[in-house]
Image (cartoon, rainbow, N blue to C red; front, side, top):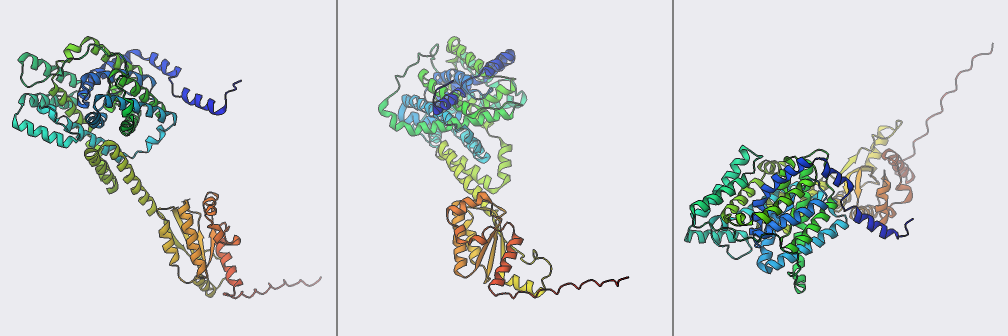
Length: 581
């Protein structure tokens, strides 16, 4: 019998739930051939992307390869999705560029390490489930903004000019265009546009063929054979991964890097969980564990900087290729990392000859393919609120940064959702004479309708809608009794309860009696906590239904002398007796 205290056992169980299980290992042995083939396909697609995103981040192509190998393997093994493929992504590159400009490569590595620790903490705190509440307009606007930023980042490489200084992509792209106008480099432009065109056309013609590798290989071959000027290559790559090291860590700079690390961790969590959700939607029977996914991404981002890699996330495009390639378990993502490791060890000299302009073309095509025109059109046509959230998120992503864009999108989406919910709340008058039993003449019914008014509260009584109820109740005409029907109130918060109490107090000051009907137990707690029920006499607050409350109000009017008690009907005549026989 275990003697460990309860909290310790709970913490140990939480940690165990984040680790790989026997079922994961069994799934990896079930279909090895399919998984290995899918992993090879993903590796072919991922190679130019890893090189391109490494160069775009400012740390070089070797950093992108190290990220794809180290982070890809650890996230595959410890992540919460059987089909997720992780590595350097365009969204993360967008965040890393200003960090590189401000703090240099060592700052990027430190940020990645801190972000990994934050992700592990989020996993232990079971925060993964909250990511599912991100609205679709925010996601689509976020993706559109990222695509625009990635495309702008590739302008210097596609034009064959040195990357100008600055952390605003639009300004950098404009400066690069000015430099190109002074001294055009048509070789770089031709290579970039050719690679992008081959990828986009090939994706329509044969979606299963990795045209990115075909286009990059062709561009490299043409450059080498024709010895084209203006096609600057990637440069020398180390023949293998460097030994793990913490030499980049500067403890004195940690305080200035905490905010960027939080932004990187937030982006890694958001993009990874969105990518895992996409993988779930493309398959039958696959469901990711969001907390395990955060844990796996955290370990991946802790390890990646030790080998010189940039922060990593789940990659939607590579994950989609993995699923379409027939992957059945996490062995496919592990195989993808293994193939890239072989490339690093055996083919570094060949990879180093790839022109930078060709990689810019790969990322330009990737940015174009990220934009789902059909989804954008559907959301913008759904409601004006959805269109506004999408546009705001996209523009904020382009002008500010990704984390601010998601925060702004969530805030605006939440405010618009609250407004929509508040509009569903209504205060409707109920006919008090319709629920009276027979035996009342028309004159009495008219008097009751003159002195009693009943209202039915529909929908939520909360902070976004409560004050409108106060205004409507305060404008009640001169009557003797007001009945409030609460049975259709969906929720009551503290603000709604306080506003209701204020309205009851105002009616009491006018000499109007207030009766409550249909108060449910979950509403009673909020009303009692602010004293709203104390404003109503005990005999007037517990009417189970509106008809009974109306009859109670009628008796109240009789007791106050407003109505005269109707004369009792004469007793029925006794039946005639039959004569005795």
